[in-house]
Amino acid sequence: MNLKTIILIMLLPVGLSAQKTISLEECWSNARKNMPVLQNLQALDQLDSLEQLILKTNYLPKLNANAQATWQSDVTSVEIPIPGFAIDEPSKDQYKATIEINQLIWDGGRTRALRQNQQIETALTKAETEEAFFSLKQRVASLYFALMLSQKQLELTQQLISTLDKKLKELDAAVTQGVVREAGKYVLQAEKLQAEQDLSDQKFQAKAVADMINVLTGLNIQYSDSLATPNARVPETVKRHQLTIYELQQDAAVSMAEVIQKNRMPVFNAFAQAGYGKPGLNMLKNEADSWLMAGASVSWNIFDWKKTNRQKQQLKLQRQMVDQSRDQFLQQVNIEQQKYLAEMEQYRAALAKDEEIIELRQKITKDFSSQLKQGTVTSSAYVEELFKEQSARISKEIHAIRLNQAQVSLQILLEE
Image 1 (spheres, helix red, strand yellow):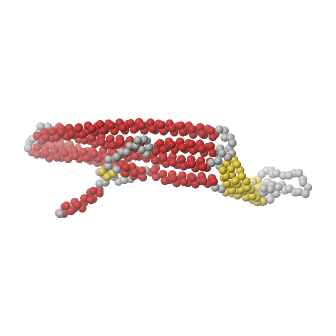
Image 2: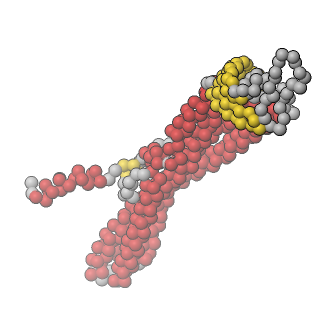
């Protein structure tokens, strides 16, 4: 084994590892991880947990400290003389400090309704956040197929350059033999240079597309990396997060109606108070004193001027609007679905003809190639037919990629 062979063997694994295969699913997965708004999902769970803890404090006793100092222009006094009794007139400056504890006994289910409503609102926000990924999936898929198309154009342009280079070598001999004029060789050289220029432009374009994918996904894709052909999975029914959003909006309206109804229920509390002030509870004793007090209270908003009924009417209208939005959404999805199905049929029909067209173009190009060597056609005529064959091959690749893109677009449209 010579040194050159050993070096090639040593470099082989490096060459193989340099090119990797990228899939659309991998791009989607990384784009999801890299999407700033989706990183809020964990924060939403934490916010919900904190809000639930806050609402639970409604069931816990509340301890309040109060202090008050007042001066008043008049005080209660007993002006009727009572033999044997001396009643001091209270001071016009009065002071008191209290510590009071309140314990909720029953709030008509208001706190429970608020907690349930909070859970629904959190689920709704999460569903709206998930639906935001829909647009990103479309964007990533569009760039992915654009890169696939760029790679096919690069491949076909390289094949064109190789064909022109091979034909130039054949013309060298024909020019030497005087069968073909030297100007014919210049035509092919110019077309080869133009193809090389196109190849350079296509590389820059492909790199730009790959860089955009990298920004969205956080990956390090090279424009020359192999791209796997996506295997579209088209669901039978619509499974978008948007439908979940509509359902949760309905649930939120029902839950809020429950909260509104519970606000009309009576609220029972128990309380205890310890205080010190001048005067104390005995207003006839004009000196500082301490006191204790305990009891229960009830509050009930008996009449609210139809506020609750109007709020319920608002929620009913909101639910109707949600239903209408859902119907509009499904109608739009159906329109888009029919569009993609029509595109798929269009590209399938085009692909059925592409092979036949390419086969005929190959025969024509081969015939013109033989005539060029014999000097019976010009280089320009040969190049024109060669480009027609090239155009037919490009059309086939475009149709194949567009068919796959329509299938994937339909998958994105319908699934979660």
